[in-house]
Image (cartoon, rainbow, N blue to C red):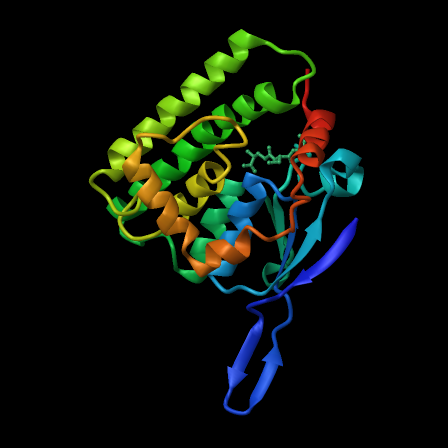
Length: 243
Ligand SMILES: N[C@@H](CCC(=O)N[C@@H](CS)C(=O)NCC(=O)O)C(=O)O
C-alpha cells in the first residue's frame, strides 16, 4: 500500500509561527467518485488528514487488515485518531460524521437537516448505483450487454433530469452548500466516463460549474491523483467488475 501525506490544510498560522497540524484522520481511498466525496469534504472542512491509497486492481481491499475496517471490502474508509480510532465505512455515513464533527455542511434544524439527508440518500441509493452500473456496462464489463447498457444509461439520465428540475428553483440541493452537493457532484463530474450526457440540463450544468469552481472541490478531486489515462482506468475497472 502506498502512503501519501495530504495535509494541505494542516497548517495553523499564528502571527510569526507556522505549525503543521498532525493528521487527525486516516483516509483509505482511491481515485473514484466515492473516494472523492470524502476528500472534498475533508478539504472543505479543513481537517488535517493522511491519505492511504489503495490500488483496487491489486485487490488489497479484500485482505484481512482492510476487511477489519470494512467487511464490505470497499473504499472509502476513515479512522479518526482523535476519536479513539473510530472507524467508519460507507461514504454517506462518513460525510455525516465529518459534518457533525465540525458542525458544518449539515444544518442543525430538523427541516434543513432532512433536506440534506434526502438528497444525500438520493445519491447513495440512486445516482451512485445507477451511474456505477452505467460505467460498468459501458467500459468494464467483459461482454457487451446492450439491454443492460441501455437500462442503466436511461435510468442515470432520468436521475440527472430529477436533479435538473430541482436545481431550476434551488441554488444548491438543500439550502446552503452541503454534504448533499459534495456527494452528488462527485458522481456527476464523471458523467462523460459513463457516457451519459447532461446536454439540455442547464440548471444541472450551472450547479456542476459552481461545484467545480470551489477550491475545496478542486483540491479534493486530486486526492489521490488519478492515473489519468482512460485505458489504464478502464483496465483497472475491468479487473474488479463482478460478473
Ligand atoms: N456504498 C459504498 C460504495 C463504495 C464503493 O463501491 N467503492 C468502490 C470504489 S468507488 C470500491 O471500493 N470498489 C472496489 C471493488 O469493487 O473491489 C460507499 O458509498 O462507500
